[in-house]
Length: 248
Image 1 (cartoon, rainbow, N blue to C red):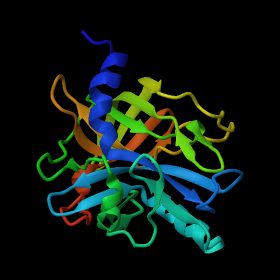
Image 2: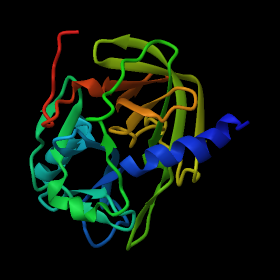
Image 3: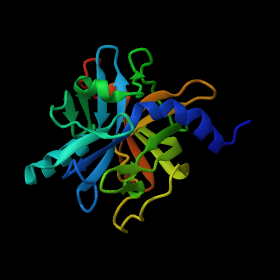
């Protein structure tokens, strides 16, 4: 019988790791030191059956646009092959929504760089609805676990196991007060008092865990507030990468 920590490391993490990763906003493609790396976020890879998508938060894309307006050297890069970042800001989102706080991108221009990455097949496994008490797991790349040298940016990862505490339409809330949180690498630095320790996990895909069944994608992290994580439910995604915006 696995302990929870063993289950996260040996059973669940291998299922979710191939379809998620970090992204960075950087002032330089040559050096990661100093203040060149402005911020980081996370993304999920999804196959709708029609398109292969990269999904992240709309506020991450807006942050890139705002920084790029101030400095045209700023680029948004994604870590696809686990060896180096790939520039990923040369196309507009297929769709974006500030209320849902997610944005979708066609991955086709950089598909060859995906290496061993996998796309969660949402076309074959539609996102199930969730209810209070359901068990959720996600893998994120918090900024406090980011380190850098002149040549490379590296990340520690954070695994969250938590429960649904509230559901309202496409919004899902998970309570972190009794969550299990595992760092696979310790934080590189402590956050400032006014900064969330979860900064950088925005866009992380979140999965429903039900016994011995394979995990199922249910949403994407959009915010944290008062010891809770907020998600947008993945059922908002249409097969073409646009959003279905139901009233409830």
